[in-house]
Length: 249
Length: 220
Image (cartoon, rainbow over all chains, first blue to last red; front, side, top):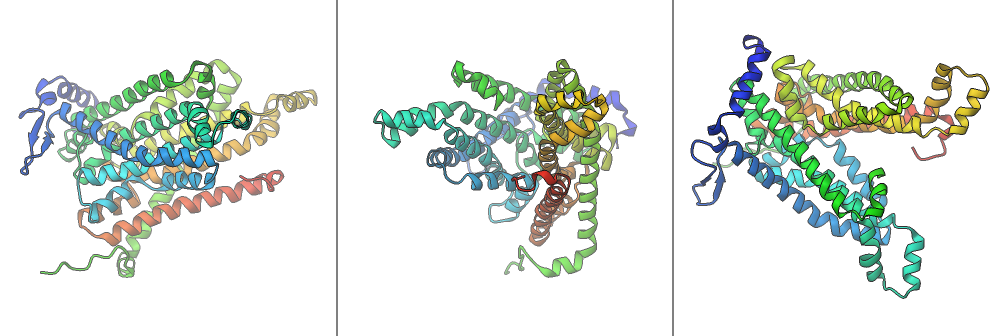
């Protein structure tokens, strides 16, 4: 328990942890190698854990986007499956991340980053699908009619008319999904995975609450930073006339 | 040596651990309801304040938006040294997350009330309090209910992260099941979590139908 240290010394310990260069660089450098020769992130280095965190998040969102984007764009174009996309996002909201993580870790997938990336990808899926669908399906029918009247094929309408108009919502979906994934990955530490959650988990296990606070600050800062950065990116890919619309969505 | 059977579902697990499962289900349910209730009590005045003084709307939504971005795992970890290991920490975290959803939905609901309706009520001599309770809130109810459903369902899922501070309800069973490689324990507690979210959601929908007889034909 924290009663021995008191609030100030916990913050002081956390500050000391964050301002010690060795904790950032690690005692044995940022990268090591596994027994099988593959690259490994050293778990005693904040830099390595941050990189691992970002890599896992990127992998999860990438896998999810690879399936959700084409699917959402297609379903939105043909305007079918609205209830299915809503149902998927509702179920995923009720499903605890920890449930999927522990289910996967106890299955043939096993402990470690692979279980985390698959679980995170499943949670990254619904916002991308939903937004791609809404973006495509929400295009003004008059605009579609006009394109049809000009002699465009269905494929041309989808790629040259609907898709550009759907970009703001698609970008918003990717941002939501990425921010949520960066916030989910810390749970990896509970199933022997990597990323910044390791600092919190180790701190809790060894009762070094300064490290717990430091880990919490790092995770929070990374999440807020990613949200801010992707917010800028989202804005920059949104055509100026559509910005007010995207902000309202 | 052949591995002992480790089924995902087993009645034996439920029979042997009935009391523990029921206990954690109760913990999970009560901490969820308590968190949502507290969040609702805090969210109402905040949303009404933001509605009455539009200049406050941006900072109130902004601050709760930033709080929402902080991962639950980090938030529990940041609170733990001060509020200790256990219920209080989890409760504070859950209230904070439910708060944003509720404030936003109540505010959107209140802002969406037809200005003509408000004018008519004023003309009929409604006091500001009467106006709020008998005109604005009933009109904003669909949006408030939507927020309540979202907050409740996500809180049920979020409770499990409480394992970080040793108070995760059904999450506690998931985590121990993982440590002891007991698949039935993980699958049972995961399923119960989904069921709890579904049941609470259905209760809210039923209550909303009862409270809004004028909307019974519409989709909730």
